[in-house]
Structures are given as structure tokens and as C-alpha cells.
Length: 183
Image (cartoon, rainbow, N blue to C red; front, top):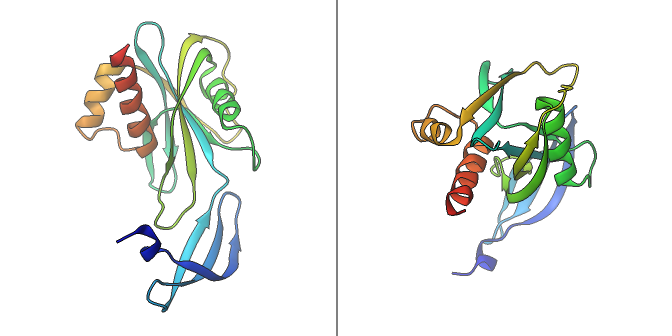
């Protein structure tokens, strides 16, 4: 069976909610068998995230409270794009500087991921940053963070034990570990 045999076609789209970060659309899609189905899609501007690894092999992370799950999470520095079409690498550089005070001399694009494609179009671009230099952090007014430095092998072990539950962090750190292990 080819992919063409499983494609859906949107025949109607209605914006039902405009929020601060998300916009919700209700879609009516024609299925491959000709039937119609309702779909709900959360529209998100997108984001960038970065795995900053220093010369000693430590990863710089942030701990922050996430209201939707009522927990403090350990995460790589990340943030949403400021506007549609913003350069994703520039957004990653901005977020690294704002959240950690770090700048990087070397950048590698790891991949782009869809975080929850069953109901959202959010795409996060993931980067590896090296050749780090320290500076002053400038988090957003509503952002309260604790900076954490963990050796890369220890972080990978924590991910594999299920102790780090943020998906973008897990994907990006495991990819960075694979790349750095080849060098």
C-alpha cells in the first residue's frame, strides 16, 4: 500500500479558539474511503531548543515549573519563535543566551521534531551548541529558572532510566551524545 492510499483531504477548516500560544482549528477531512471525519488541531508558531555542551563535556540545562503538568522539569534551553518565519537558529541562540547567559561558537542542527502530531502542528528545531562562553542570563519576566550542569554521560543514563521526561530534551541529548561519541 502506498502513502497516497492513506492521505486525508481537508474540506473545511474553522478556527474555534485564538489563545496566547495556541490556536485551535476544527477540521472536516475526507478519508481515503470517502467518509468524512472531524479533526481538532492545535496550531503553534514553533520553537527552537539547544543542547549546550561545554569543553568539559557538561550539558547546561534549566529546571522550570510547568503549569500544565504541575511539575518542575529538567529541560534543555528552549523557547517559542517570536514571529512566524523567524530564523530557527537565531531563536535557539536567543533562548540559550536568555535562559543561561551562554553563547556558543559552534552550532549543529540535529533535527526538527513534531512534538504531538496527533493534535498539534508544533515543530521544534533541535541544535547542539559547543565552544561556550559565559555571560549574563536574561529570562523573560514570567520565567523562573534554575540552571543545572550535568556531565553528558550522566544525563544520558538519567534519560535511559526514565528520570528525564521532557521529550525534546531526550531526543536532542541522545542525538548529541551519538554525534559527540563519533568525534
